[in-house]
Length: 316
Image: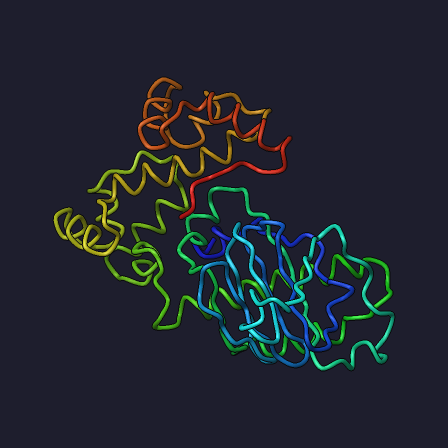
């Protein structure tokens, strides 16, 4: 599996359309639910994305915005009004959603129509990539993203069975398109390992570790995958990624383990074996060293957080 695909596998939207997303000026929508990511797509017109404490970003038809939470943000027709005495800000909550209009009638002919999807990303694997995003970003539709937007527009107002699921999956696809285009842009600042994927020396080693994280990889074996010496691999890998191959492998294993520990049917020993450790003791020591808590404590906190609506994690 492609590493990019692996990192975003399982990221799914939860209810895409705001029924009151047809906007007539003056308007300001404040998103306060603390989603890890919010994808915003103007189906018509334009507005401003205003992250809390950040600079406003213009968002127009033909562009997509991704806002990284959990801080609130505002979508408005005039950024100067967000905090003004006549701002008229309306808070938006996902539980307030209502079905979209039943057809392309007057409501869809408003000056601005916003489509939005929330992504409550709790898994640690996708966070390895997503935590490198800025608080808010805007990119134009490019390549296959443009036709996808057109198809999304055609789906609004649909009444066939499974309509919401289809719409959610289309928005998931749009999210991946937007992220892929963003990380290809010069202003993006992806983590070092992401850029190293295309390197002829470090790239094959990273792919090997992702393909089989439980394998007892050595620097010599990884260097053979790249067709270079151990010294060459270690030097190039550290230059691009910031850590050596063995340190990267350990971190990747602990990331996988963090997600596996949220599965109650797996014992700590079973999780250890899945990420390449022969016994729970060695795994627990490595996990605590990198994560600051034992696997058992992490599992306990993750279980409690699921009951509260989400595990609190440090901002990346």
